[in-house]
Image (cartoon, rainbow, N blue to C red; front, side):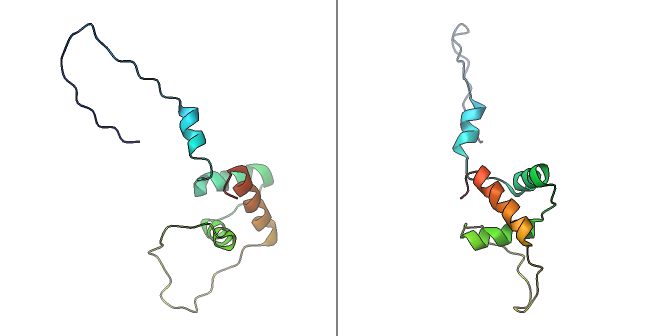
Length: 101
């Protein structure tokens, strides 16, 4: 969150109270879980260790839009390990938990 404000000395009796409900801010971000949150959720609920690559592969499979990746492989025929079915199911469960699908 970014805030810009101008502080000016005026009447010393006047003051402003601001309440910020963090829970409400978090709920507005539902469906936008970070990779770390997904990794932690999968580890906690299934005991499986998943990588960022596994999550990205499943995101692609589900059609979830990712940011542009600037670390693309140099050759088109580069090989990447595929995500196992067990890990895929755990990641999909995490996506459902975070409201991404």
